[in-house]
Image: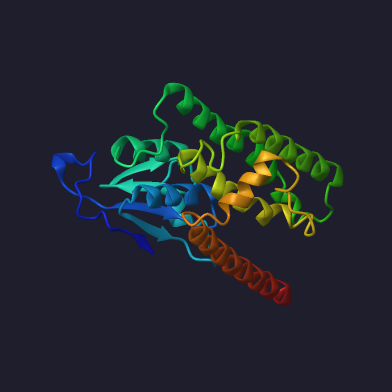
Length: 248
């Protein structure tokens, strides 16, 4: 899928003023990839999605193009940019039309604080759960601690979501791209441990924010497409595991 309608418009940050295409490499089930994808849609950027398939969402050939060995990364006129937060800021600098950063320095600081809170205090304990998914014997003490930290991060996040219905008020802005993708992703891991519990519930303004954002017309179609991609990934993963058990 590619997002266009602005393809004929002059693209800034291109040498000699030549129009170019932007390519985002990665997988839709990554919240870091999807925050950039959401940003491009809000800004009406001509972003081409170069997607890894559900059988291998983090292919070595793709990761090899990044010295950090990670995806996503952005390709712009044969130049590569890494780390989702850096990429989002780059796109705002390159394409100031339809700005998603607030106007005042104070509001820009708050917008960055919201994203940093998600990235530093919610996502790390979530990712730390991953090795426990298929551990021969799960460390229940560690799992409980990590869930506590996720909840604490969401509670802190709630204190910054005081304007509504979006992160910075009446209109979507840059932190909404990170929050929509990140909050969507939480149960992809947390439900492997607590399938009857939605970790996003019970956190005041953060919960209310999620209830709004998941059905907001500007985000809902993409979140649904991310869900479709995750279902395909899980099906492919289970098929590989079943084949491995048969061959064992």
